[in-house]
Every structure is written in C-alpha cells, then in structure tokens.
Length: 399
Ligand SMILES: NC(=O)c1ccc[n+]([C@@H]2O[C@H](COP(=O)([O-])OP(=O)(O)OC[C@H]3O[C@@H](n4cnc5c(N)ncnc54)[C@H](OP(=O)(O)O)[C@@H]3O)[C@@H](O)[C@H]2O)c1
Image (tube, rainbow, N blue to C red):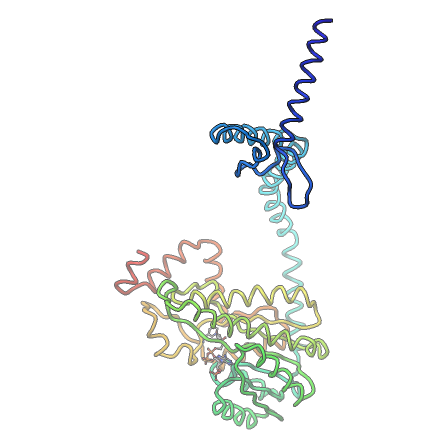
C-alpha cells in the first residue's frame, strides 16, 4: 500500500513535470497553434523563451538531448520501420534485376532477332519499291543557301517537288532557287529568316502555307559549327547560340509545322550528325546539340506515332562550307577522314526519306565508330586524343 501511494505520487509528479515542460516549451507557430517542445525548431533556443530558463550551455545540452530523442523517435516509429523495409526490398529487387533483366533481354533478343531481321528486310524491300513520289509536293528546307541544304534543294527539284528555301543570305538563296527551277521544280519560294529566332520559325511555316497552301516535307538542315575548347571559351553565353540554331531552330520549326504535316501525312527530316559518337574535340557544344536532336526526334516519333514520318540523318564528314579548309584549319589534326561530296549525301537523304527510313548514317561506314564507342569507349578516347590533341599546349591538356 505505501508502495502504491509512492507510485501514485511519483506518477503525479512526472505528469506535472511534463505539463510544465510543455508549457515552457510551447511557442506560437505561424498559424497560432501550439506544438510540443520536442517538435520545436531546436536551433534558436526558443524552447526557453517563455520562462527564465537555464543558461546557454544548459540550454544547448537540453536541445541536443531533445534532438537525439526526436531522431530516435523518428527512427523507431512505425513509419520509419516500414520505410526501411521498403528500401531494403527495393535494393534487393534492383540487385536481382541487375542479373535477371539483362540475361532475360539477351535470351529474348536471340529468339526475336532472326524473325525481326527478316521482317525488317522485307519491309525495306517493300518501302524501296513503293517509295514516296514527291512530284508536286511542298518541301521546306532550312539552310538551303549552301552545302547539304543547297544540294537537297536540287535533289528535290529533280524529283519535281515545289520548294520553300530558307536561310539568311538572300543572294545565295536566289541563286539556289534559280538553279532549282532549271532542274525541274515547278515553284520555288524563298524566305529570308534566322531560325534562332522563334518568331522567324513561325513566319517560315506561315509564309510557306500562305504561298503553297500545304506542307509535305520539313527538312531541318540549317546549322552552325564550333571550333574552340570548352575551357577556352571566355564568353560562355555565346555557346547558347549554337543550341539556338542547331537544336531550338529545328524543334521550333517542327512545332509550328506539325499540324500541317499531320494533315498531309508528311515527313520531318532532321540533319543531325555522327558527332554525338565521334566526339571530336573543340566541338563539345555542337556535338551536344546534335545528340539532343537525336533524342528529341526519337521521343517525338513515339509521341506522334505513324502520323508523321521522321528520318534522322547522321552525316559523316561532308564537303561543304562547314568543312572548308579555312574552317578545318582551326582543328589540329593528324589524320582527316575522307569527305563525301554534298550532292551524294543529299541524294542518299532524299532517297532514305522517301523510303520512310527512321535513321540514315551517310556514308554508312561511320556506323563502325558507333560500335567502337559503345563497346570500347576508352579506345575511342585514345584515338581521338592521338588524332586531335596534337599541338603543344593542347597536347599537355590530356596526355
Ligand atoms: N558538313 C559536314 O561535314 C556535316 C556533318 C554532319 C552534319 N552536318 C550538318 O549539316 C547541316 C548543313 O551543314 P553544311 O555542312 O551544309 O554547312 P553549311 O554549308 O555551312 O550550311 C549551313 C546552312 O545553314 C544556314 N544557317 C546557319 N545559321 C542559320 C540561321 N541562324 N538561320 C537560318 N539558316 C542558317 C546557312 O545559311 P545562311 O548562312 O545563309 O543563313 C547555310 O545554308 C548542318 O546542320 C550541319 O551541322 C554537316
């Protein structure tokens, strides 16, 4: 009995102590409500602000104690336990998937690949025989004043397509338009525009629609290059212009063209490059802009489905203004891969587009580099280093 009384007394004292602590520790949160002391922000000592509490050292000791208590409570609570169980299950699942998934995929591929390759071959033959006839169709080409774009204009002209040619240099566009008419295009329309400006991208599509009333192929070809090590670039904001032309110029034009291409069941041609896997030094942002195009249009193809055909072209080294001797002089190089004439490249692009290909690497042999990049990237790094980092200071950078 005395024991029981003692126990009751002790309980009442503890209860009162807790109440006192709560009263001292209560503060006014922003919404006017109060909350228990251990949930207070502990770093400002506010727990003691309503009473003449302990000294600052005592205060920090108590705060530390409460902090530990709080952490322990959180760590031992049911929410925390279930979280730990879930995390452990996730880790186990990923460990299992790391082994099972690649193996299962490999086996599945071995089964599926032979019939799939036969299907692809038959589909290729069918698409080659029933290739699209572009005579009378409307083709818009950006960057048509020189290089690949110029030769694309001639290739489409020979096939009887009507052309909308876009670039900034009007005199060059006029000359290309005249030659395209002579080669057989029934109607050639020129638009002077800078595709790095979104309003120009919209205007290009609007003016083409106003002139022809339809759009069948959009060829996103315009692009600019780079010739500087990334760390040497002092005006980093200049680099965004490469993205503005090469990536945003292409995607904005496509955005404004999509409703019209849907109507005509048309096609988008994108001139990317082998650059994303040939990783040439001094072209870091250019390479990235071309990689972005591949990823963007791959995704767009999934979003749009079969309504609009998308052909992503990855040219190798093509003989154009971009690869003129004066442009290449900015690169120190031991060995320069062989060029392909721009007209050969243009022919392959139009053929591939009319066939409805998803990808084209032109010339084909550049695909070998993709294999090296995927299977032994270190070897490619060494090769690129040996080939491009040849001059004094540049050499010291990497070797
Ligand atoms: N040559 C190669 O080895 C190679 C390899 C892979 C990929 N590519 C790609 O192929 C495409 C064509 O290049 P190219 O070799 O034919 O070079 P290019 O002869 O220099 O042609 C580039 C074209 O883009 C136009 N252009 C540039 N900036 C523009 C802007 N802001 N607005 C509108 N048009 C613009 C240029 O016309 P204006 O200056 O008159 O505007 C020119 O017609 C580029 O996307 C390039 O990245 C080339």
